[in-house]
Amino acid sequence: DAGVIQSPRHEVTEMGQEVTLRCKPISGHNSLFWYRQTMMRGLELLIYFNNNVPIDDSGMPEDRFSAKMPNASFSTLKIQPSEPRDSAVYFCASSLASGGATDTQYFGPGTRLTVL
Amino acid sequence: QKEVEQDPGPLSVPEGAIVSLNCTYSNSAFQYFMWYRQYSRKGPELLMYTYSSGNKEDGRFTAQVDKSSKYISLFIRDSQPSDSATYLCAMKRGTRGTLTFGKGTMLLVSP
Image (cartoon, rainbow over all chains, first blue to last red; front, side, top):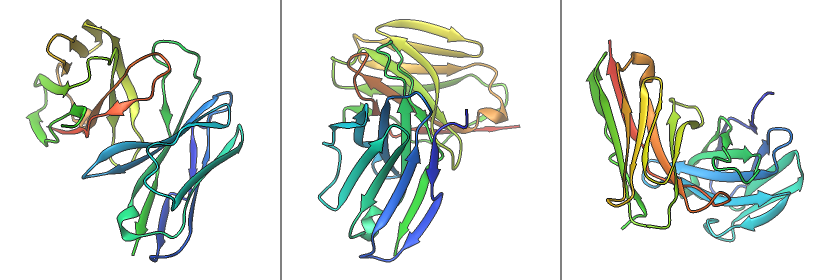
């Protein structure tokens, strides 16, 4: 399996522009997570989906952020309008959600976002 | 107070040293404890997990949980330059719970 695939790997945009990050989870996984990582705050959960349904979006910073999962193999995280403080590495992760003790989350390589 | 505290380092050691990485947490509801390793410009990958208190060993790595002290540790024996990475602790309340991560400790092992 190719693992979790994220695109783009790097994104540089100007303040006020719309940014769309994309994620393809591991085939067969039914939980998908979006995280944001910064030096100051570490790795923070933004939102997670189970069977394509958003379960917990309490980590989404504000209305400028939105996430969708139209099917089991694709998810997007959109920021509109973007601000310099949104600059971070955004990770997507997926898991089998089997209910087992580990329910291991597999992370993608991340998208490094810079908002000027 | 953050739910999970972790010293950011960096921690610099010579090759072959024993490394101790630690996290403290405040929420006694956490039951599952993990250690993730993150190489530079890569995503985190699961290294080890433990349930409740006790030790778990996997090769050169030992994970230890002391729930009474709300303290978890990861020990690396015979450290190698390839162990140079950021190590993040993570924990969750139940089998289906979401993970809460520490900020990570950067480890540098010099040859």
